[in-house]
Amino acid sequence: MKKSRYPVLVELKGKIREKGMTYRSLAPKLGMSYNTLSDKLNGHFAFDTDEISRIVAELNIKPNEIVRYFFPHMMEELIRDLYKEI
Image 1 (cartoon, helix red, strand yellow):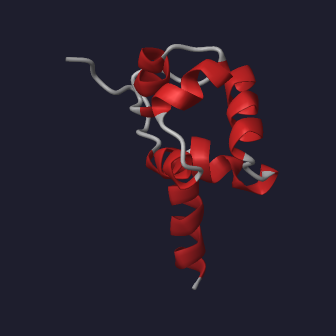
Image 2: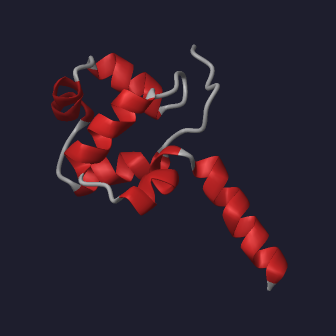
């Protein structure tokens, strides 16, 4: 069994479903196999910047949403810091 080294990208998985796509339909559009896409979404491997750019374009993700979908740990820190200020 593979161990996750990176955060599971739950929000990105939801965005894929929201767009009516499956991993199998999205993977070839990104130039990768289904298994590679699945492994990266599940935190076994990280996406590189070119892959992130292709996903952003394919799913029409806005620039200000990139952190939300690809760096959830940063979002958690931002939210935590926001609540500290309140």
